[in-house]
Image (cartoon, rainbow, N blue to C red; front, side, top):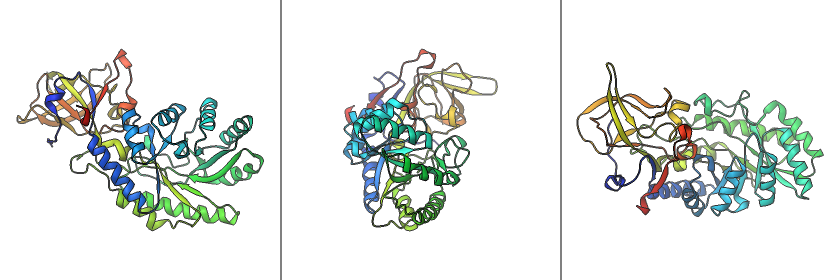
Length: 386
């Protein structure tokens, strides 16, 4: 369905495409909604930097009061540079290099989310060398099926992430011999782009069981981090510009009773920034084949890889045509057959020079851009600065 939205199309005409455009007002409204609903229950939010690390986006998120969830040393540094307080930074990731761990130790971050016993041992040794004690949370695979794309499900035994439930007792036993780490919590993340919220209810049940077993061992969990995963509406971004944070957090409130000594944490990423960003591209050619009509853009999977990588679908909109609709394949210029944004979709009759918006591209768009084919990285513009 062709959509109309308020893009400053006349201003776009003077900008070199392709580029990312961010609606600052929508980003701020989304942040306000997320914080309002989280504060209702005293929950702590750490923004997943991997979704979008644009410095201005990070500064807005920090100003709204969120912490940062990082999965690399580079992301830790980006968070620090954007003004995030070290005591609100968590460091996750299945393959933390020594230099990245040392950076986290030197910055005195809040917590390392640890994914294996070997990693725990390395953190202990590096912390000992600095005369420090590292605060850690154990990332546990809760064996909850998120019912999402195979490439973004993370909470099952076959996934590379986290400690399996049947290994947890052994890891806990090993902590006694690691004096330079202090266990402060547990971390979970079952997958991304979840629109069916039932898996989160199942996660709460699994964590309740796990906590009861840990209490029998005399282990009290100070911090529980339920990760992220709340999805956005890629099909109708104008109808649902802000995710339903109220229902999302209420599921955890209703299904996981917090103990007096506990703090609850979340790591939203896509749900914060997904809808505020769009990739703006220009039509290079309209190619008429014997069976297909192709709209060939100057943006490709070098600017937005999600359709090629995840078979993801983004709403596509012609900003400069209001003619009758025609069926097209929308493709990019990259020398790969996978460089296709959509097949057999209706767009207003399109011609060379038309401006095209690929919607809901604020998450895993600009941050995943590459220079394949020796292309330049896309610029970024913000609604309040145009």
